[in-house]
Image: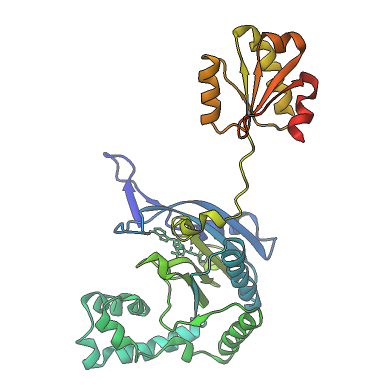
Length: 357
Ligand code: HAM
């Protein structure tokens, strides 16, 4: 958590928000309990007191998406498939994998933790694990699976996994989840050690990971959190599923694809160049007319004609609309195509139509 003291002389401590799910659940509990399933997204800066490195920051930006009030496992499938299609088909990212695990219900977890503790307490294991895992073993034993120490990882290859200790209902849901993803052609891999960093998850957990990101390889993660609504004061428990992706990590993945992205082109810029101050009023009126027609327009009021043309070029203008004394008298403008360099005199009343062609 990124905790700060509100003022030097105050004992008040403020925790900067580390993620969006809890706030969305509170918004649901306070204002939206009638609308289920409630499907929402939010976007904004998040803060975590991390050791900064590539793709890991103390301030970063997340897009969070949640579906509150639906417990059907097919909802998870629909949600995961939507994310997969978004990354693959809309953003054209191919270099990623979807990894999944199933954490079962509260009862499954209780039973499983007994088995996991038995495994971890075996003397040949307890003596070999790293100091961090010794602490995790006492405080949050399932987080041992996040350990990056190669010796620990080797040991945990033989650990019991929760997906092998599910009740009948959860086992069926886990089976259905994978089957339905297959039916929708969403490639996925079972990762038995995936437990996720936040404690509210149960049943489905998943991550989208990419080798192209280096050590911080997850760019989107989420899962089911069926107990959080009640834990945060909801009158009625509501099952929920959601995920968040990090904008900075997504940008790292998109960087090599920037030329293939379906980014809308910025509108063409038109620069009006009045040759002297005598044409300023006319330039204002003309710009007003063009803007009213959604034609992106600016006026250059200062400088010689040469310097104004240079500036228009630098600004990337598609056309320069030059108005001098002659044009003012003849009620025309000199329309210069900045790409081809061609010029034509156009009647002022025809300029909009000409530019919209
Ligand atoms: P999370 O896995 O902690 O999940 O974060 C989601 C994403 O935020 C990560 O996959 C990563 O892209 C980005 N991210 C997290 N920490 C950092 C960091 N220090 N620097 C840069 N990017 C980061 C959640 O936050 C859950 N609230 C997701 C969720 C929504 N689960 C259910 N609903």
